[in-house]
Length: 542
Image 1: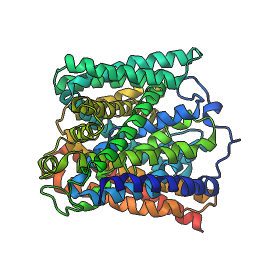
Image 2 (image 1 turned 135 degrees about the vertical axis):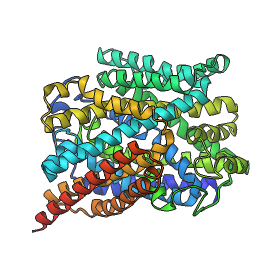
Image 3 (image 1 turned 45 degrees about the vertical axis):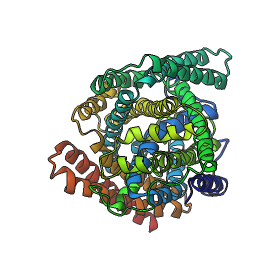
């Protein structure tokens, strides 16, 4: 198969899915109503509940749910060959991930913008809610720790991109303040100027790279994450997400053009085999292709964003189609590009060097290395091309850190209310501390990328639970549920199998007791929610 067919087939299928399936779900299943008041207006507070333009919300939602996962996941899964990864990315996005994201967003909108664990109380009762808080909290801390590792690796490996990635923060703050103060600035133009400044700083970075090592970056990122999580959503999150949206469009366009150029040069052939059933040291191809490619196909983290920050900003319920389903299919296309950086961009020699066995490759570095080859085909020097892709990846991951810390705070604060832990635990700074402490602890355990499989399994478990929550809600509305029940069954079996495999065959024999405890908590909490959901479902059948 030729690499050009990857992007052509993916683009056509995603477009058809959005045009027809997303419309069916929006109009026939969820009955999106533009006249229904959204939580952003109902509870407007200038901090979390902020009615916002649709394009800005799309940028926030897309960049928050994207992060590094739809890039790292397909790159990691390339060890099993290109065919299983491609099939799961495309079909998983259309039939699982985008369905999941739309359902989570609409269900939250219909429950006053409350988080997944919180509105589950209305659907499945208090026991399921308490268990869901455990699942959501531990997934979020895994996300935070894994992404700090990814960013620190990239900052160390590509020191010429340091100025660009940190310059984005003050640039976003300036744009956010100007918009908040009602200055008449064009956010598109402002974001393009910000991106231009960032990329000018690549040249500065090639002259004066910043090299301080992995562990100092971990500490700096922890401090940054805490500070960013405490800022109001309009100050950093919204403008930064818009800047990253411009970066993403640029990355997708340049990558696609580069692949087309390679095709005409006769160099876009696949370096990887179609299928490798049992690579050395790798876990089984099933369930781990589906688990490793988390955000690139379906991701439980998306349900936390779709029921966390996004519904508190959406100003029109009708926009849920574009933000929920549309953002996910765009992310799916990014995952296809990421897969191509590994199976095409590295070349045969590069693939054989990075993928002889599980754990050999420094997965976060593959995307810049492989992507640089695409840009070289259109005349961009390799040092600039690789740094460009590194900055894109770091920018997405940094945005996920922002959202992760904010969502961890929201999750703990809502849980504190449910568990009756006192008002002080719901205060905005205090409620960040538990998640921050656990993330910092995980960062210094040196598990690093060993957390990715347990993160992937936890992520897919939460996705399955969000699917059954949406299905139960549809059941109460007397709407068809098959679009959610079938993906739920497939995902709960896949994800629970992966989590059990991780704990029994790796974490317990390796005495990785922290991961054993986290994996066991998530597994049994999810099992309790599924049992509760089944009981609720059968009662509604009567």
